[in-house]
Amino acid sequence: MQAGRKKRTDFRPAVLALAVVFLLGIIFYCCGGLSVYHGSAANDAEISEGVSTLEQLSARSPFNLKLSGLRKMAKADIPAFKEEILSHFGDYDYNSENYRRWYSDAAIVGDSVAEAIRGFGWINDANIQSEVGISLFSAEDVIQGTERLQPTTIFMTFSGNDIKGYGANVDVFINDYTEIITRLQNSVPQAEIFIQGILPASYEYMAANDCYLYRDEYREKMAVMCDELGVNYYEADFILEEHPDIFADDGLHPNWQFYPLWLTYMAGIAGINTEE
Image 1 (cartoon, rainbow, N blue to C red):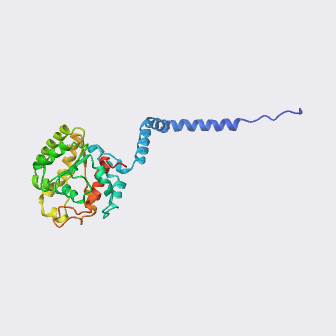
Image 2: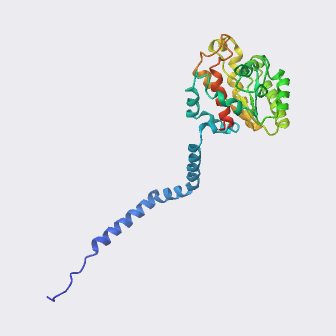
Image 3: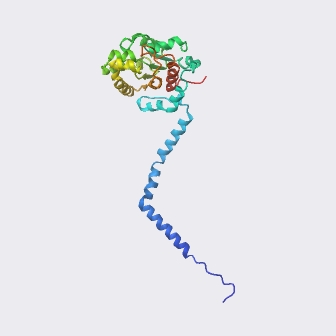
């Protein structure tokens, strides 16, 4: 035996292990591993965009989520948005110090439900374009008032009088509303327009008035109308549905508890609830 002769290293186990790994890689490739990789690569842009959107949404206050017609209606249904509002039920002063500023360049157009806002003294009278008992077919004065005001945000809140007046003639209502919206788009071109769905009344009132059998049809067709005209559609039903006992004795008009939540909700979806 020669002195200093080194023992030869046996590489066969390592080579065998590499061969096994290589073989397993081929099997994984054939069984769809490549398709998974390619699928992930194909989705990279979409995933990146989704992450970016989530980051933007998480950085926003829910009250600054803006609607844009039917396509973005779901943003008004973020649970946290509504829960925050509902948590202030019964709080008379909820955001009341902000309403005059928030609505200083807006017009709330409607019937007696909108008219009742005046009694609180929260908003300048000029920003409330409403009359008791009117509906779309008798709204000329408040439409002209809105045109003279030239606001940058318009909330159209016609509801109870219209569903009673038009009844089963939903398409006639839609045609009349379309004419008014189109008119405002031309005469107040800078304004972003928000159309509110027909509010519910008390259970007893709706049961006694057959016109409310058509409320869902009104809401569906109003949403489509808004989408076609490029204006915003929203619903404030959740407040009255959560608190069905806040109607006045007539069953149609909501009590004062409705108004702080309603005004906060509208300002939030329109993005006019700015900080000082």
